[in-house]
Amino acid sequence: MSKNIDFNLFEKEISSSENEIFTEIKIRALEKLKDTGVPNKSHENWKYTDISRPMELVHQYLTDNKNEKDLKSSSPSTAVNEIDAHWINLNEISLKSEFAINAEDVDINISLLSSSKENFDIQINDPISCLNALLIKDVVKITIPKNSSIEKPLGIVWTDSPKQDDFCSNLRCIIDIGENSNINLINIFQNGINEEYFINSVMEIDIGKNSNLEYLKIQNFSSNHHSIDRCLINLDKNASINFNNIDIGSKLSRSDVEVNLNQKGARASVNGVYLCEESQHIDNHIWSNHFSESTTSTQNFYGIIGKKGHCVFNGKALINENASGAEANQYNHNILLDDDASIDTKPELEIYTADVKCSHGSTVGQLDENALYYMRSRGIDLKTAKTMLISAFVQKILSLIKIKSTQNYLDQLISTKLAKL
Image 1: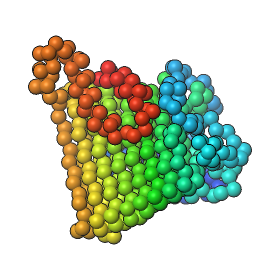
Image 2: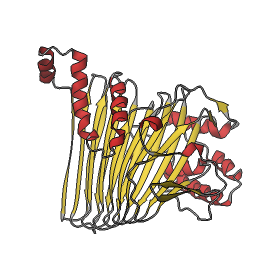
Image 3: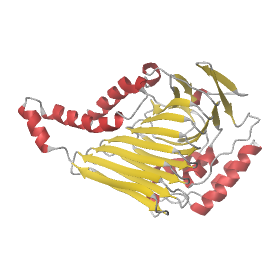
Image 4: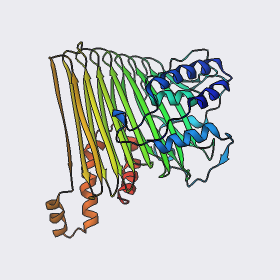
């Protein structure tokens, strides 16, 4: 991997901070990063993913003048026009004080750490979160009150505008869902920028007791983009999340999802589809941590990998000694479309109590030649037959998405991607 970044550059960045809260956060983050080191391929969790180029962009950001420039952009995404949702564009928020939006008679509070009277407790527990904390300009917090039920989904869009600081962005958002609530959330990562760029984003989600979150994340950055995102989820008693991750874009994409099932009856289903075309690299690392009794987690990821594409799946379930009656399942299935396509897959279990139900497994293969032969014998051309088989394969995950207003948009997005494979 890359040479390590000079920590003196971070210290210079900290000294330029004019906000005491951010200064304290950045000092803590730097101390932690010095302990862990910048991720590289000698680290177990990063051995298949080389982030040297993103780190070079960070170095350029720290050493060059941070003047805004006009970035060449292509046509913007149509997600906000095609999906019916209460949309919030995080990159357009410029506030002096907190404000609220009303969604179906529920007041959702949105505030910035820089101007809030509340002191946000942001997580700095791994190298990527540390790097993010060192370079953030602000933290957005979205608070959903208890007993909220919002039928139309909330939509969060992280789009890079045509004016950006050179080289990289670091975004952080906290979502706090009160107890006894039922929420649908869409998180869109996309842009129209054609130039090379790195985005490092962290999302923290706290789900109160007896609440349910239906969550859909779509990553569709441009092909020159490098994307690392981390989502940290905490579940209270009888809380649940149905998390679905669609990875399509970026030259390099790394997605970390860590779910903490903290209280009895917490449930987490983490599912994903990744479609990887030529020379793309897509990495998914999932952790389900069972810290209490009668908790349930499922990880289910399906991948399609084209010529010279490389993907990584690492799914781990930790069953703590206090998590009797826990159930954890992990599955990863992949289809390689070319001899040069590759996948490194590792579902794993770490169990410290006997009273559990656990299973895991992975498969790697090609499209079914017999099925292709049958379809061609019925007059279907080879390309169409392959597309039909792939679509049926990924539909097993797409059928788990319960936010129905996204269906047409996802169908078109995936059809467009499949045409490139």
